[in-house]
Amino acid sequence: MQLISLRQLLDHAAEHGYGVPAFNISNMEQGLAIMNAAQACDAPVILQASLNVRRRYAGDRMIVNIVRALAEQYPNNPICLHQDHGNTEEACLSAVNAGFTSAMMDGSLEADAKTPAGYAYNVDVTERVSRKVHGVGASVEGELGILGSLETGTAVEEDGSGACGHLTRHQLLTDPDQAADFVIRSKIDALAIACGTSHGAYKFTRKPDREILAIDHIEAIHSRLPDTHLVMHGSSSVPQYLQDLINENGGEMAQAWGVPVDEIERGIRSGVRKINIDTDCRMAMSGAMRKYIRENPEVFDPRKFILAAMAELETLVLDRFQRFGAAGHGASIQVIPLPEMARRYREGVLDPRVAVA
Image (tube, rainbow, N blue to C red):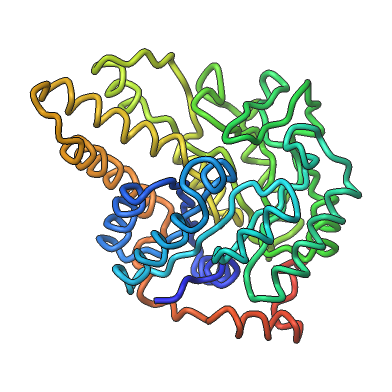
């Protein structure tokens, strides 16, 4: 099966009222575990890679070839391959040229992926990326507002991306009125919004409430932009059972709180169509490997503890497909080839999904 564009996948999710978890991957084993879960529940899939994975860990050829092989092995589960947090026009275009079917242009930060950017810069660079990427039928996700903690006013760097310095509450929450202008001018297919979520395991110092996790802000944005596909970054739930699994098997992970799954489900009811998850996957695999190695000290075949890790990841992923409503939708999606998507962009059939209420 051909890879699917993010736009087509999220249009289908919006039509049927579900959200799609977007899992970061860096190797074959993660991809297989995710696709096994998708096959088990008939879900479409978003696999995404950071710039660090593309340039310092696996490389474009390896990631693209792994995902293409997965698409052949699991033909009933459409896969979108997405560039996560592209920090420059070049990063996004090189991803699409390598075979990615979607790219995020994170213009909320300047090209160093650390300095908060002005609004004009964000609009300009994101629009340029949209124009060029749409030319080949691939999709673009933009970001308005800066990912970071409403508790501390700071952001955590992960995979090379994270704002430095103190951030105001205004910077940390996407403005609904500005969002309407941004979506129209940048011509993006999906809008990543800031609502208090952040990268990594240590998102909150306590169980989040409305002061530090502004799900009601998502509802305000959706009310203003009812047809725009919204994206939640930093949405790992950091489950307690995985923290315990790690620490009971030699780990020293400090107490952490993530984004509760029921709050994500609330966001899905208010237009969130893509939910980024990375930390949970790392925790599942590392915890399972620690447990297997502790219980089987005589084993030196890495495949055995990697298989244990894959099984734990598959369980986690299956739960998210089911909770977010993506289960049961994979086989019903007929993939539109990218050249046809490019034609539709040219003819204005795929204008930005925006209907200002």
